[in-house]
Length: 442
Image (cartoon, rainbow, N blue to C red; front, side, top):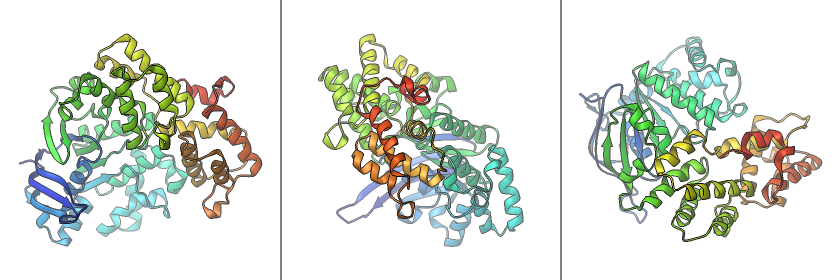
């Protein structure tokens, strides 16, 4: 008997209203015990809805069909039964971490055990064991805002394991992580599957994250288009590119598939709208409908003005790499393999490196919340969403009013450094800490 089985599932949002969305269409799937599966497809295809249905969070919206967990239809559960299933049947790892900001890391991990009536002392003992397993026991007494994205995600995984759930659900767990932490999370999900024997279900829109999965469900527009079980892990590893997109977009040309499959590698961490626009212009360049100079210009042009909104140096490097791909006329599999070995630095990591460089020499204390706010405005400035003047206001606005609270002198120093790499073709050798970390990488 499959651990998870969906039979003829249909689910709508806002049914009967002008905003009606048919999110899942006649879905039939089977997931066995100790499977490691992924739902793969573009954003908005129904992947997350499917996860939340399996976890019991969306069964109330079910229009028709059955959601069977170990042979029992959870859509027929009472509220009490459903609550118990959510507490001990599944553990969820969210993309946005979803930690409780007002309590410590230890108590965040221990929190799910409270619903099972476990004493506080025992909860904390078990939570500490999980932190030790994930090698983050030193973070036990910190608060979420004091952690990096990678640390928060590991805490999120520990929390998902708190009640020893046999099914682990990961909703785009790599989206907010830098390369190192993304690889760490992938390695741990693999360990949970292979060593612990847990059933792991992941949602992703990035082909590179499929290398460890045993079964792939291809989704588009709420439909399961295809189910694939790679014969060997090497089969997945050698073909992480347009191979996966061909099943989703059979009508696309080879160059369109190339643009689609590598866009997420070039622009990891950017918004879906930014990635889609980049994909369009990349496809235009690969098909020689625009020349190299126009391509570079649209990469650097602000998003609100019809461009992609990259900062100048990044635009130049992507343009250069694109011309390399065109001139070498390599097969897409070879291109993708090269990019996987030396991928573009994710936006979150890029911004953190910029922030560290901008704050070099600063003697004051920067709290975790300040770092998060600085990263937000750096990201908006390098993509030219905000002006230099608004960037300065954010830096100097009081912390009590959700600003960053830096002195005008420090803010001016930061602005001068940042503007030098956004709009000017400067040599970054004088800023070795930043050039080593991201300016030379793609």
